[in-house]
Image (cartoon, rainbow over all chains, first blue to last red; front, side):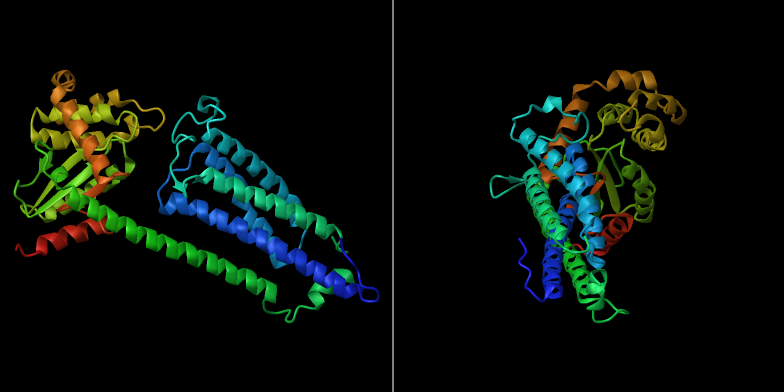
Length: 158
Length: 235
């Protein structure tokens, strides 16, 4: 994947590290925007989060902090801690989407009180629902984290 | 050597590196977008609520609402009220204070917003108690709110326990229990529920002062808007 230039390994490490940092930055921006977006739905728009939304939030909210710490003092190993969270979040988001679409019947879920997880509350552009936004964000974050992990293995100090 | 490489090239060890500065700027940018979006959404929502209220004038003049203060008072306050809601309980002393301050020029009318389990039972009971007298009704509202922690435990509400607290304010409990299934009471609660939908009421308490929603939610916002309406010269 990397093509080290003969005679100048330091400079190559430098640009490779910069590329990994940029990917991590992108991933962090995505996680931060998703966190703030979910807070916008609940705090500003007054939509009560359902149980499944809460589970997804549990796995999304730590990501800006973990990835952010990895950015401030560049440490690509933060991916190791972020990836399990993102994968678990993807699982819940996928389950939620299937529930929304009616693939899984609602009475099989844990949502017995409060807000129903199968209620369509917000639909943007006809089909984009909140669980779908969540799934897209989690999948993109997992993809970026895997890419960062692969690239950072080639770095000398990772 | 490699371990040091990223640090060695950073321009200033004391201040922020360029990367740290970028992260910090992005944090502020994201929070700024959030705040701006929240402000924009809030402004639009308030305009929409005011518009909705002005198009739903009928909802403010339903006959037979439980009220205090003169019928033709200059300031008409309508409160969508849930007997099981902690926030309504917390607001009550402030509302009472505002009513005392504007005695003779303000009228408070309650509408029932039964958003919690057990609320409907208590609303029906209060309406039945109103048949025994309006002063008694307001004393019963106070007693029910005071006892709210006992009967309105969320997830395990026991609305029947309100009766323990009502004889001491003078309620004829047996009569109230008989009266609470009156179809007139059910009809009034149904009307309240319809107006909640029509006005887009989503939370309790929701206040309207002379048919206008509160600009700023909270006891101060309510007091300010009541004072403003009271000071307004009638055209």
